[in-house]
Image 1 (cartoon, rainbow, N blue to C red):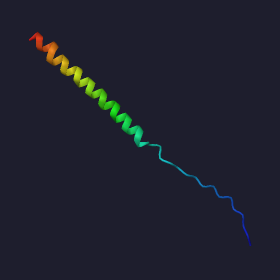
Image 2: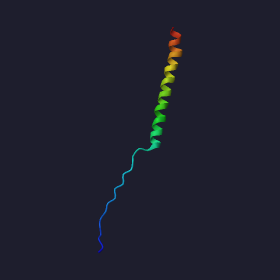
Image 3: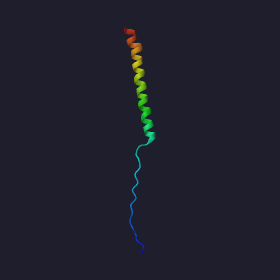
Image 4: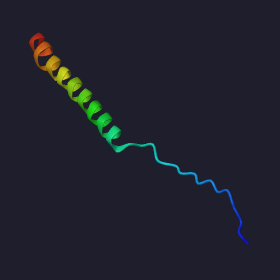
Length: 51
């Protein structure tokens, strides 16, 4: 006896893409380097000449 059954297969994939995480990390690390570079410049040259 043959039975025909309708079977739905649901596939779920993770949405976290490692390359996007790496790009975001590089971007924010670059922002931090620029921020600390500007801060170092201000402390060394601007505030250094005032005192």
